[in-house]
Length: 252
Image (tube, rainbow, N blue to C red; front, side, top):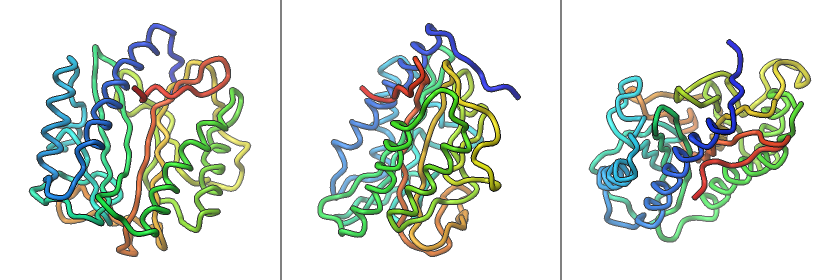
């Protein structure tokens, strides 16, 4: 399947959808504190998204039951909100999708609750810094595999490893489109595969493990953890390639 090239007016629609994601994530960031439950945070974000005239696109997607993926501590991605109340020292990932007038937004953050350990600070920083390093490195004509290799090397340089079998992706009139963008090089040649072009819109989302990159899906069929059983982290932005460089759409 061909990778879509979006017209400027389409990119503006995607920007609107993604600004709503960014606003919801910021709302959650501001309300993360000991004693608040994951379901309360989920409901807060859903109310915000609907108040902006958008729809929480994760709700019902592939059967996911909620508006927000709330990934607690060892859960790296796709965590289902529960009645669990946050405690000081926890880390929590929020991944949010929206649909606005037929166009989709998607972004994620991981944040600490109160005082967190130095190890958890470094884990979160790895995901965030990998994401921004990749975005700043994007140029028209670069291959997606080069981008995957760049992210893998950055993660390894921090002493962590990328989660396997999950990836970033194109986005537009569907929440997940071509191409798939792993956080590691598949195959041996980063100079192979499709090139990045102006008008492409896609999500980059580093997912960070500590010692084992193998994913395990828990009994609820959604929560993804590492085989090492240790905490993980996740950051994501939607970007558009404009004038040869990547522009973040999922910011306020």
